[in-house]
Length: 76
Image (cartoon, one colour):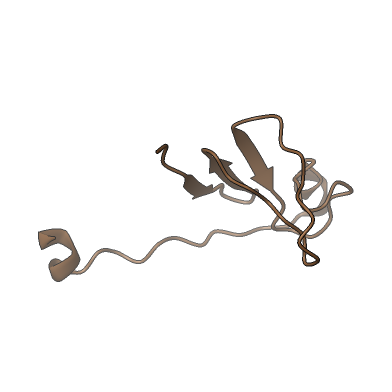
C-alpha cells in the first residue's frame, strides 16, 4: 500500500501526495487525475477545494510550523 503525505507550503496550499479519495460533504467523489493535489487554505480559490494560486495575489499568509518533537517522540 502506498503512503499518503500531506505537506503545508509556507503561505500556500496543502500538498497531498499519494492515493487518496476526496469527497464533498454529501459524499460525492472528486475526480482526481494526478497522484498529487494542492488543497486551498486561503479560501480565495475559484476551484474549491483545489488551489489555483490566488493566495499569491491576496496577501494571504500562513506560517504554521509543526511543534518540535519531544524526547519521548524522538526515542520511538
